[in-house]
Image (cartoon, rainbow, N blue to C red; front, side):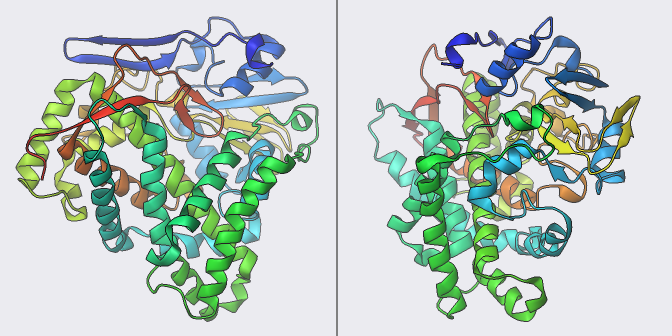
Length: 472
């Protein structure tokens, strides 16, 4: 009912000779008011921003009994995320409450001593030095996935977001759990995550009414069953690893071995489950969304797709792209970087102040919210040329990008631990599939970006695929 009372902003998209203005909701001229903010936020977290928010600034606005300080300049983002990160390390109560049943005290929403103990552990497991090893799994799974696409009738339409989620979930499940997980168990984990995310409520009324921790969320039988589907599979695999029967070299195997070497970390079965679930969620959802948007953008910008094919042919010839080719695939890498700029998977990074602080000219109360929005700073008119245009070349030829103006994986001590894994996976999957297929978005379809937890297309992404004549 709430969505029927709310009229989403008009989607702007323009395509011309050699240029593409990527789809985005039209910024509002005036603030939407309390009711508009509530209904708009429940529909999408990116649709209620006003025009003046799309430039670097620090400003504040009231929502019910809370003041939100919007931090949208590189220097102040550095202050919050680096200089004063210990005061602003807490994720928002909305996010913590929404995910606590699924992730428990997993790294994504943990804080304090728990986060300090586990962050180095998880970072080591997904460190860039391990990417070449995990890259072989990425190659194997993507090539197998491509066989399924090759068998499709060319006019068979399907939803790309779900397809990319299937691909990335298979990759991350094999790298976390090993090849022995089994198709049924893998599908149970994927379905559990998808169901849980579909039913997330990202608006915690209790916080906005003054409760610093928000109100506990009545998750209901559907979300509880979804969480149990995930937990049952992961706990079974954890126990198998603890009994010495897991696959050597998987992420979970590395976690278990670290538990054995460092019992002081307190990694019991529940903790191992929570970290495995967190890695799965982060590694599955964000890369799937990035690939979906990348395919949409290059379909709308055929001159970029043509240049990508030329680059892949120059670097790889007729063989399949591999993890070792990523550094040489400069344009493919730039396409992913530009996609992440236009469509950061997590477009809002709210933080809660442990103690009172001051950001710019604004006082932040204890328990107050500071909002850092990659969605906004990535499109700030005073920081980026043609900020709504799809221009991968802005990341090429040694371009220097301000690390506090480009934050698709956050920044500072809480930067995404799997950054290198996710970027490498996205580049490799894109290169392999672009080499082999033309992905065609339904004629006349215009994507509407919306966000509840991650950034997706409101009505999915209807596509067909056409094998390329020279596919390897």
